[in-house]
Length: 96
Image 1: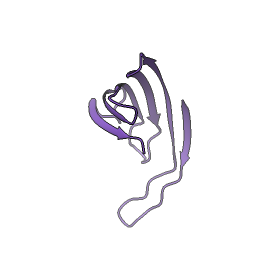
Image 2 (image 1 turned 60 degrees about the horizontal axis):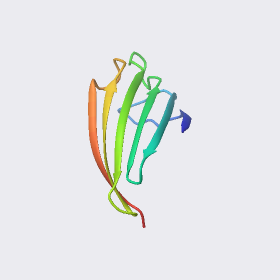
Image 3 (image 1 turned 90 degrees about the vertical axis):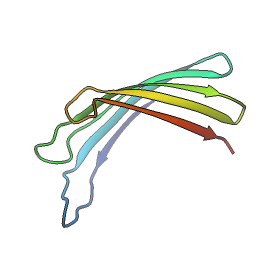
């Protein structure tokens, strides 16, 4: 999956961000009937003058517990000063 966006944010009395680019490249592979493993790399140009660009790599795992329900998690690593050093998360998805 590939995604690219040019974002023109609004402004307020407190913030006046610049337009910026954001992008994502990801892929995954299914192993058997229940397991899907994937990875992604994403980044963005800085939305404020003097801020750092973002760049992050992510590994994720999803386990399909049933036909309609998946449980997953990810681990992320920031690769630039504008990104967090590490990140992690869990998810539960239900198809209706």
